[in-house]
Length: 114
Image (cartoon, rainbow, N blue to C red; front, top):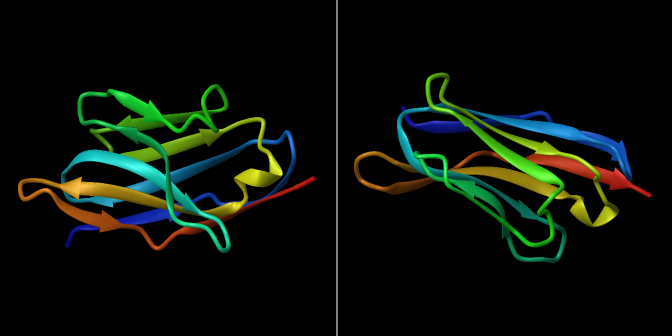
């Protein structure tokens, strides 16, 4: 069964760090992290191809780093210098092989207090 399961969310003060992890079952092409804050649309945070090419939202460049371990089938997001505006539910996303079907994890809450 293809699925994505996130872990690692929590509460932290501004300036702190958190690391999110996504355990993937199945094989994926591009994978990424998205977030959705209350009252806002879901937005891309960072994305990484199976070959390691990365894309970051301007708002997180220089603070967040996406990691992918194809051997362990995991996707991590290291978040440093967190800001209150980073508060959101973070979702792991992936497009499965071979049909390029899109999958989402259940989401994990990140709360940054000022």
